[in-house]
Image 1 (cartoon, rainbow, N blue to C red):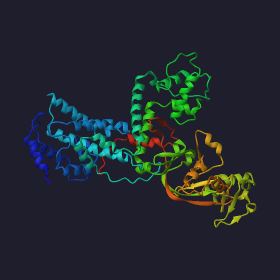
Image 2 (image 1 turned 45 degrees about the horizontal axis):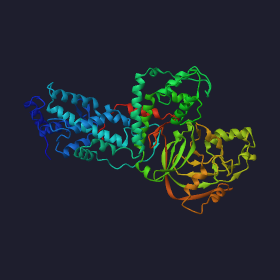
Image 3 (image 1 turned 90 degrees about the vertical axis):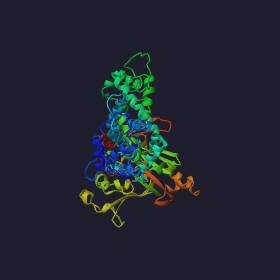
Image 4 (image 1 turned 120 degrees about the vertical axis):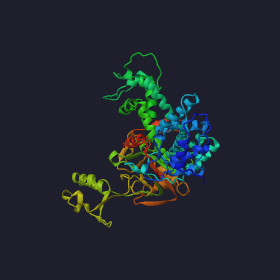
Amino acid sequence: MKRFSLITFLVILWCVKPVEIYSQHSTETVAAVINSLIEIDDPERSTKVFGQDLFSTVVLRRFYSERLFLPAWTDGLALPEIAYEMRYEIQQIQFDGLNPNDYHLQAINQLFNRFEAARKGEGEFTIVDFANLDVLLTDAYIILSSHLYLGKINPESLKSEWNIQRTAPELRIDQRLTLALQNQSIRKSFEQLYPSFQVYKKMRDALRFLYEDEKRFQSNPVAQWKTLKIDKSIKLGDTHNQMDEIRARLRFWKYLEEYELENDRSYDSLMQQAIIKLQKRHGMEPDGVIGQGTIHALNQKPADLIATARINMERFRWLPENVKDQEVILVNTANFQLDFISKRDTILSSRVIVGKNYHSTPQFSAEMSYLVFSPTWTIPNSITRNEIIPAVKKNPDYLRSKNMKVLTASGQEVNSANIDWQKVNPRNFPYIIRQEPGEQNSLGLVKFMFPNKYSVYIHDTPARSLFAREDRALSHGCIRLQKPFEFAKILLQHDPTWTDEKISQSMKLNKERIVNLDRKIPVVILYLTFWTDSIGNEFFRRDIYNRDQEILTALNQPRGRKSGI
């Protein structure tokens, strides 16, 4: 392999003064400079080029070594179109929710400006400038590719646990760059690294439009809008002193056009239709009533929605690629919804109830393997201590009314009447409480099991009225399903003996019935506060678990030196 020593490079610099751009720099001469820039003997020493820390070390050096350190983006005389394309792609990376300045954009722009000035006879562009720019563009390609493929943030570093497993094939970025340069197509090379979900490109388009909204916002008097507050819900025909401000925001978001007003403080039918559109976008009941949730949505500025979009595009980069190609159960806790998907078709959608803020449903993946009809519920110790024992102390008939039994650790039933409940210390209660199958059972008539370390599962519930609520963060962490019968029917459709009647009968037994599935179905419990559908409609959800800010902070953190790539 042909290499150039640092001494050779110093001799070149001593003998060759900076020259005008149209002097005959050979690619071999630029290669000598590139070699000296990236071949550092001390591994602890930070590699700097044009004042910039290089993010990659291993891949960068492997890429240039395999091409004998010859420049990738220049011939030593000019900057071809492919170099301009790479700079453009760095600029466009903001529409992936990433920060262009993480990829040396300012330094690259400075070198491009110096090159353009030299072409006009204003200044000079030297051998070192060509080499600096070449290395920075390559380093930017490498780290940008890594971020598009895996995300900028390692989800394992977050406080809010992310345990959705992803097996990502090794990404030979140096080989990808070589191929992209041969094919003269940087854009296509990056697109191949996008998350495999079709909606990602639609999300990218949506973010582009949000940036345009932000420009309008900054140039529009409505940009000064203040936080709206209401004391009670506003219904059609009501009047309110903030109605004109609400109307202005609806016009800004293009839900409402200008029209002649009879009373600028009145909530009329045209406004109501605009409010319904807003409510659908933000996942509220589209009833046209302006409540606290609607006011929260109206207070969102374009910058707020841009941040939310960026956060969730990063989350999409963490998801397993094979989810889209198989039978999978997706639960978006922020949307309070379960979707059963088979070969990209949504077979069933159902409302769900998820964990309260202080019992938040975790983010993880597992495999569903069996169902339990007419389940019993072994009540967790925390619920026994904090809820059951206090209830029994107030009402001695509580256990019987809830069809609950007291058991020893070995499963032997204990007569609850023989326990002096007033003297029971909840902290050292020696028994287990189990609720028997039936209509009152807190797990309902069926539960769907996917063993996991969180002891979270999907189940029916007797509290059916709760599904009508907008905010359905109400459980202790498990997922309550609005359509348990329909879900069981789909899971068991491989076996024709499981008729509707048989399923109904199995849900009303006086003891548990376990049914193994004929296959293991991936279950992914995720948390998305923004996404689009296949035609580009945008959907935003409230950050019920306060998980977004940690990701946003990490996305905004300037990228440091990363020597492992």
